[in-house]
Amino acid sequence: MTGAVNHGFLGTGWVFPVGHDSEQGIRLSDDGAATVRQSIGLILGTAPGERVMRPDFGCGIHDIVFDVNDAGTAGRISRSVREALARWEPRIDVLDVYAVPDPQDRRRLLIEINYQVRSTNSRFNLVYPFYLA
Image (cartoon, rainbow, N blue to C red; front, side, top):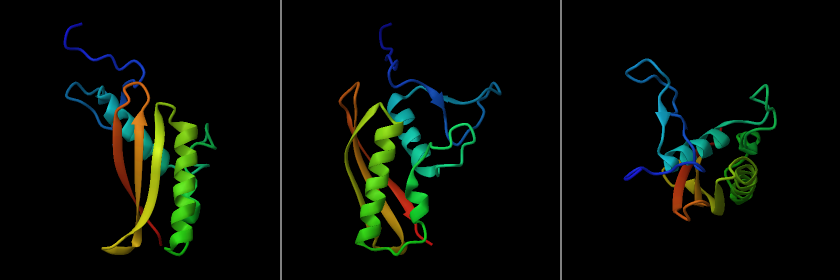
C-alpha cells in the first residue's frame, strides 16, 4: 500500500452536512483529521436529549444559551466542552479550551479548542462560534 494512509484508528465517516456523491451514494470522508473535526462539531452542536437512542450524547452548552455573556458563562462553556469531548471523542486529547467574547458580535462567544489526535500526535485548533440569545 504505497502512498496510502491507514486511517484505522481515525476511521472514515459521513461528510457533514450529509450529501450524496456522483454515484448517488452517501459522501464519505477518508481524511482522518477532517473526520475528527466533524465529530467535534457534531458533539458541540448536539444538545443532550436530542438523540432518541442516545439521550446523553452531546454537549451541555445549549443549556447556557440564554445566559449573560460574561466570564462566568465563558468558564461554564469551557468546562462543558472539555467534559463532552473527553466523554464522546476518544481519538483526541483536549489540550485547552477557551471561550472568549467575539469583539465583533457581543452575542457570540468564540470557543477555541486545542486538541491532539492520539494516534498521530498531531495538534489542531478549532474555533467554534456559539451564539447567546
